[in-house]
Image (cartoon, rainbow, N blue to C red):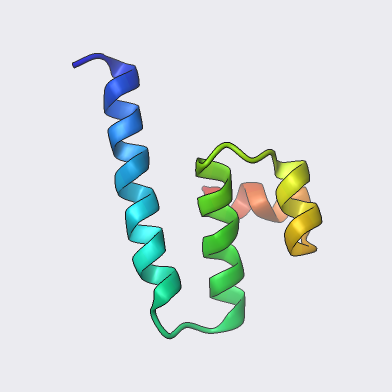
Length: 65
């Protein structure tokens, strides 16, 4: 298995975990963070995410880490 396949599989696992977290009963700030990370893992740019969620690009990078 090459690095791309492993990375893709890891991303799919992370997205599934985020989906479960988003569906759970969490506070709005945590939900926004999880959605931002999921969108980033799905290929959206920080600029797109910041416009959609109304947050700065800095915070998206911080949340993703």
